[in-house]
Amino acid sequence: MRFRLTPRETSFYDMFAASADNIVTGSKLLMELLGAEPSARAEIAERMRAAEHAGDDATHAIFHQLNSSFITPFDREDIYSLASSLDDIMDFMEEAVDLVVLYNIEELPKGVEQQIEVLARAAELTAEAMPNLRTMDNLTEYWIEVNRLENQADQIHRKLLAHLFNGKYDAIEVLKLKQVVDVLEEAADAFEHVANTVETIAVKES
Image (cartoon, rainbow, N blue to C red; front, top):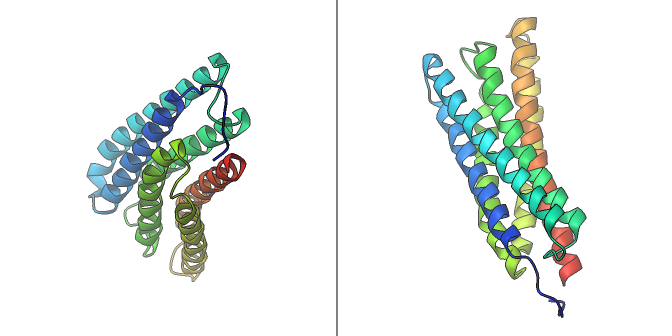
């Protein structure tokens, strides 16, 4: 690791870890949604909305700390990018749950559970990786695995689209379900953006 002569603001590490832990909470709520009766989904959406608001607060705290810190643990643009991408993940997960409730979707198509399982695994890996930003140790396997998961998510997404367009669903239902699976795919992409940012930081700090 590059030797530094100046101290660095370390509270960023804790805030990134807190943001990632909140994403794990969001992924668990997505999993809960899968097994819930339609009548129970509104309450899950309320909890997801609260988690998304907590994520917003965490992101704003990082930006505030960034604007008030003379010395940062790594480049400012990378701190901003990492915080923004973590926030995006939570936004997309909350949007997916909200759409399911707003559209009164009775049954999600087969394959959505695979999408959510990928997101849950990526959330766990991200939460495990954030504390390692302090030392930049054991991060290579993280970003490799998250990129693999994103490729898996792409394949699941394509199969879901093929299923939606097979003529089983009416046109309105296709539009509703497609929006949900598209937003879940965007969440997978956002996990990859986080991993790519971590890789960029690690390369700069090496």
